[in-house]
Image 1 (cartoon, helix red, strand yellow):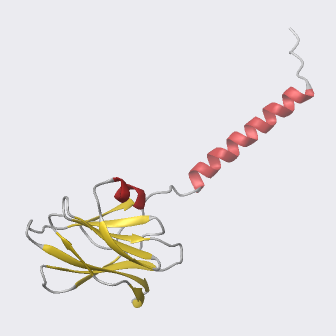
Image 2 (cartoon, helix red, strand yellow):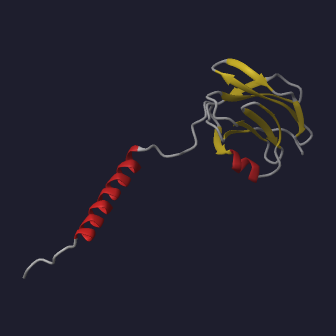
Image 3 (tube, helix red, strand yellow):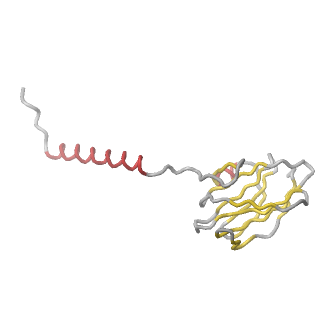
Length: 150
């Protein structure tokens, strides 16, 4: 039995399809997955800024390149990178007038670090957003006080 004849357009179509499949698979295994970056502190999770906005109200402050906000429901403190400028965000915070703490994260634009705190319903938190280049503070927002019960 003689093999079926293949037309030039059909053969070209198969060749191009095979090439496209090969290139697609190569890119899938070479290109890193777009996943949330790892935070630099233990006990912190990373989420997208859209996820923060979709949850409960978050009361915050912003400066160029960084936003910090506190979500009373569950006592979550978010530190978000808001600019693809190569800098990283940080938050200064203190609970009920206690000592100031500073957290900084290498996140990438559009991502937020979620620090789960424990604050009594009658308590409050003071927060300030800052943007950093290495350990150098580039700019900071004003300070905002947020009640732990919203």
